[in-house]
Image (cartoon, rainbow, N blue to C red; front, side):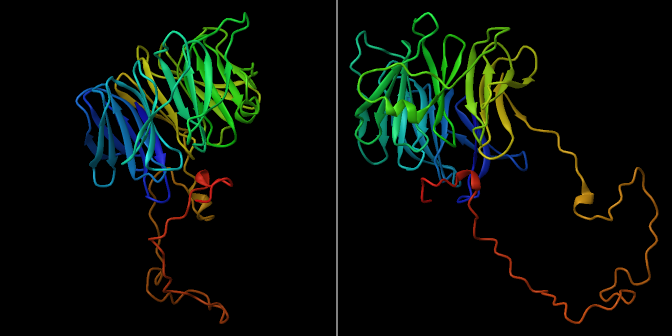
Length: 369
């Protein structure tokens, strides 16, 4: 499993991945080096989640345990044990002491650190076992989906059922829900289902259908019409203008334009690799994917243009001998033209290296943070 984080409050700009031997590796995106190892579990790590401030890391594993880590110190603060393997964990988008757990063959659990655990109850027949749950963008709602294609919306505070709708195919048959992902901006969210179609819904329209279950039409449907590909993992871009989906067959990434639904790019990985996870950087045009134990970072090729910093800069194909002026590198240049007397120079400028400016990707008009 792989994911990325970039916060202004903690100064962390990192990418992390969980391995089959239970270790968590944190990479620095800028230096592309390993920042820290965490010996978290004894079985494969299935899910990872950052807290909003970037100081805490939540990990879930097949060894039935969940750990809360303080990243800077590399210490395990809390450890929880569940009666079955963990499929998914997620920190609350705002609060750093609340997280959501999806155990295998059990109901999702809302956990408060140093507090109580609340089970999300379902009045369903047949004892549904495989349930996916996720917070919405602000953490005010919890969306759940099951293998029958039904999406339930709960209030995250009281766990009261607010509304529900059914995901159906063209022939009115139901399809299983594999995952639900929310955009970082706006109210849109996507539903990855077993019928090989990615459906994008407007969260405001879904909440408007309170009461009896109703049919909600998606604002966008995305699929591979040629190969009929099953999707392993889907995600939004940081600005919610693009959607990236990873193929379950091989290491291929499909990128669509959210506004028009057009396929704009296909990224091909190494042949023979099977994709496990894919994630988009919160505020950079960078995609990270993991396949066959290798983390791949996808980015646009960057051509350095030094003339943008110095207009007189000249690029050389080979080394040339430079003729230095007599006083060019002296402390006081005698050949320099006379400066304007009104021109003021500030040699001693105090630079603030402590205060962290907030990142625009995390600034939201709905949140005073």
